[in-house]
Image 1 (spheres, rainbow, N blue to C red):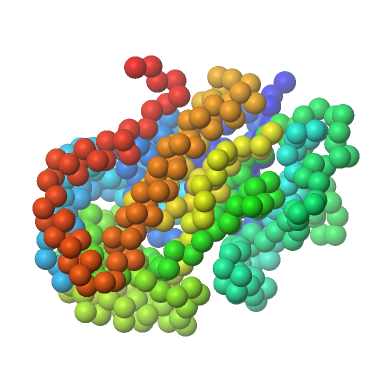
Image 2 (image 1 turned 45 degrees about the vertical axis):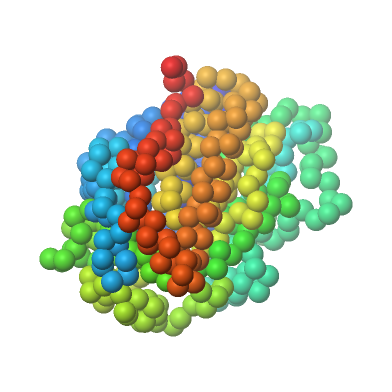
Length: 438
C-alpha cells in the first residue's frame, strides 16, 4: 500500500519535501495557510551544498538553467574600500535566483491546497498523529492579520502570513488524542471547512511551515523564538552599469549590505541593520534610504532605483535554543520550522534543501520510524553548528556598533589569508547524501 504524507507549508521547504517524498514513492498532499501561494522575499543564494541537494531532488538542472552563476567579488567597508577580495574557486560560486522563480521550478505540476491553516497538532505515540487545519484562512494583508503581527511584537514572539495557532497545548494538557488509541499509527489532519471539521489521515506529517511553525508550537511547546536586534530590507532592481557581476558585501557600524545578480537581468540586494523590534515604517523604501544614506554610492544607487513595490522589510528572528530532535512519532520538522537561524551565513534555504533531500532518501530506504531516527542523526548536529556560527557572525557584523570593535573587525578581514577563509567553508558546502559511501 502506498504511504501518504501531509506537508504543512508550501514554501521552498514544503515543495522541496514534496519532491523528495514523491521520489521515494509516497503520496503527498501540500497544505498552505495563505489564501494564495505567493513569494515572500526577494532573492536567494544557492551554494554548492544546496545545489547538490536540489540535484538529489531532481530540480538542480532546472535551477542552473534559470539562475545566475556568480562568484564573490569581495567584502568592503560601508564606504566601498575593500576588506577582503572574493574567492575565485568553483566551490565558492553561488547560483542566485529570485525566490518566485525557484518556487515555480519546485512547484511545477503540483496542486497546492491553500487557505488551510494549522490550529493544532498531536503526535502518534498512542495512535494517529493529527494536524488540525482551519480551511479558509484570512488574507495575510487583512486587518486581522496585521493585528496578529502586532500581538507578536507585543509578546516578542508569534506568527506570520496567516499561520495562527488558535489553541496551542498548555501545561497539563494531554498531547495525545486519546480517541485515537488502539488504531493504526497514521497521521491525520482535522480540517475546518467553513464551520465544519474534516479528518484527513496520513502516515506522516511534515512541518515545513517556517519559523512560526504551528506544528512545532504544538509538539515542541517549550521552543521559543528570539528577536535578533536587527531588521532587514530586501529589494530587487533592474541591473545598471554599476551593478555587480558577482556577490558584494559591505560592512558598517551596526549594519550590513549585500547585492548580487539574479535571473531576469536584475539585482537582488539586502540591507541588515540594528533596530528595535517592530519599528516598521509607512515608507520602507525611504527608511532604507535613510539608514544607508552615507554608504558607498553604489549602495545608495541600488536602493534609490528600487520601486516601492519591490522592497520588503522583515525583522530577523531565530530559535532561542536549538531543538534536540526534529521528530515525534509520525511527525517531522524541516527548514526554519526545525532550525531557524539568522541569515548571516546565507544558509537557511540551502539547509532546507538538504533536509528535504535527506528525508526523502531515508524514507525510501527505511521504515518511517527508522527514517525519522536517522534524519535526526543526519540533521540535528549539522544544523546546530550553523545556528551557532550564524549568531557568532552576527555579533561581528550587524550587531557590532562599538567603533573600536568595528575597526578591529575590519582589520581582521584585511589580515585574513584567503586560503583560511576558503578552508573554513569546506564543512559548510560538503553536504553528502545519506547513501554516500567513503
